Length: 503
Image: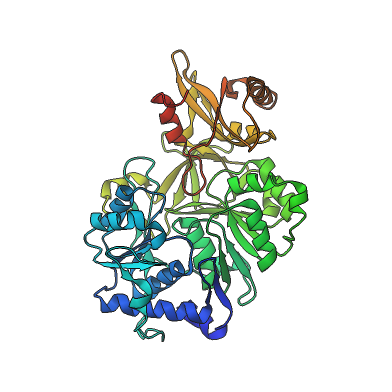
């Protein structure tokens, strides 16, 4: 119960700062104890499930802390989902308690009806029909540390890009290690972490809530990300650490230089990033601005692969790190290890403890593993010195005329154009070649699409890429479909073209 430790060390220091309310370490710890007692009093026991549908606010952190000390299994739910989609998750995870934010009252009641096992229903931030008040349930309980804490766990659901989403479950969840926290260089009671993404997602939950609080570091929660708002918070709170994704880098770099100069970001010592490939020029731009403070990871809900700091990355631009020992292997289509520089499927070695399985999906679990390894579906290669480079996901691979084309490489070139807000290169059906390379572009605000701009983008690709990689056509759209972690949902984009809803 490290939160209890820090509550004793720094009782009055801010643990959570948010637009919906703040908590000191002492307050956060006390509320977590109250909630743990309230849930136990209502019959929850070690291993039972709790689901939460909530914006970035202090109560989210309280629920995380309470489940961790009461031996419960927590499943955060994406509040962008429909009631049917969210209801499926709350029901499938076998939640016995469901905590919902009144901001999402419109779907919360429907979700509860779809998950009858969640008999304990608590509303935060206001009333929800059929839910008890979170504050009223906590009020009669003691805030003293529980006498018999039991380590809880979390079970997040995959994005569901193929079929229904499934819970990523670990029967043995190791506690956060001191070695892992040393990577961040946290200074307890001094540093401040800025959480920029939604806490229902794995990366913000782990890197921007669990890790800093475990280390005695306060967290500032953003409820919705916007570039200048982030810069303002960095200056106002002297932020030392934050977690971002590459699309945020791209949008930060689009902020005018005059606006950038208004904010002092010199307090930042580490920007953790991952979730999607980061174009080399974009990362160079961020390092030029913030300094060599970027720290990249290659990981997913299922497991962790590699890390790389700015110094090592600058020596080998594009790498996501050098695996330790046999932690990562790249295999060809026959399952054999590839030679240095040869592209194949990237496999990560499952840890001896904390091995994941897909909840109630034995066949899917079995198909994810190959011996002691599993794959996230990424393709890449290792160089002569063992550094790992990613090329793209297997699902995004374009095969045109029998030749493999990696869209991420093309996207990176398109993003260098000053008019491009974001880019998604996909393969669309072609009678002769099988697939044709198409660039789908979301332009920056106040930039108008035109045939001349499309021609300019095609010319840019022809200058920078081999001919077979270049898009044959460019389409402009108002908004590219995105997953909740910022990655472009390319499968949905491809399906829209195949269904004729885009041209």
